[in-house]
Length: 267
Image: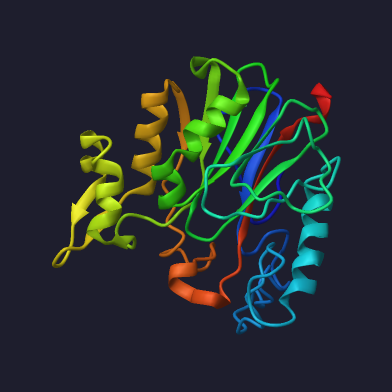
């Protein structure tokens, strides 16, 4: 399936579909992109992505239309299960509650149901999708540095109830190391628990450090026993034409959606 502005996740088992939206999701040349920017070079009208509440006033309605476009163009069997993300480690069990009346407060979700589409929203934080090798269980996690250090990826693996050597993981777009300047407390949150995590930090000016979220996530997944990993390599901050970035654009930033679901052939 070829959809403009959609990054298909790599390295997942057969029967699993996953990926991340770009700013121009679903638009062709001459159309306005996901932010209302004319593809011929016009100025952006607003910064709405697929999140309901981010961006200037009036963006919520546009985000709703973007979500409708998402479902239509990706041929999703159901509305994605959206979360109320709080930079924690809670994992929503979509088997127990596949259609909650309100977005669950969680930063990850897991399911073995064939018709459930899992989703997280990001704008610099790292999205990670997971799949069992037989596509029987799927999961997705939103991992900013706080959630990553607290163990959101490990909590997601536990919730999958699948031996970790049978789990495939794909890392999506996130802020790159050069742009992600952090304080010493962020480095300490990782290195105090795992001295080897120091390799993911490069010294900056004064007491500042540049953190590599992708490298930190890979290390934590490896230590948890995950042997199959793919993805990464994009910087949301530097690739302004492709991605939203909260650190770059502040409160005006939109969000990208990362989704994972079972292919129709396996339902």
